Image 1 (cartoon, helix red, strand yellow):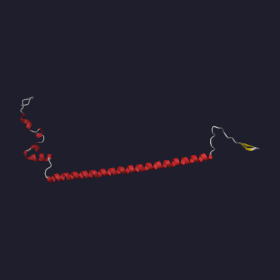
Image 2: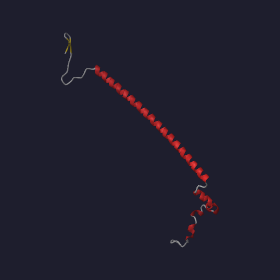
Image 3: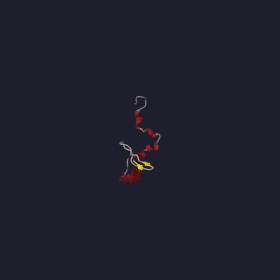
Image 4: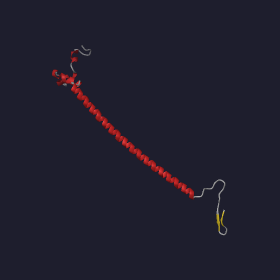
Length: 128
């Protein structure tokens, strides 16, 4: 007897789902329930594991393809970055050459000691 009501505990042995799924609990469907829980014969087990191996192999090939695509994209990005770096270095070298050429054309700036001034006189010429 259960504590909460006056019903007997005999009904506890019956499945709760017997009323909703009666065809599964018929006496002749006992094998069906067991086959849901277990893999039957050796050939069925072998077929199951072969199918599982095929799925794993397929997944591995898909992963390898994704990885190779990702690596190719990464290499392409690295190559583009290297090209941009080379362009920036060429531009910096060109600016450096331009600066050096300008320094050669322009007289040096006055230093702290004084300034050298040259004057062009009409009669005397260039005076320093």
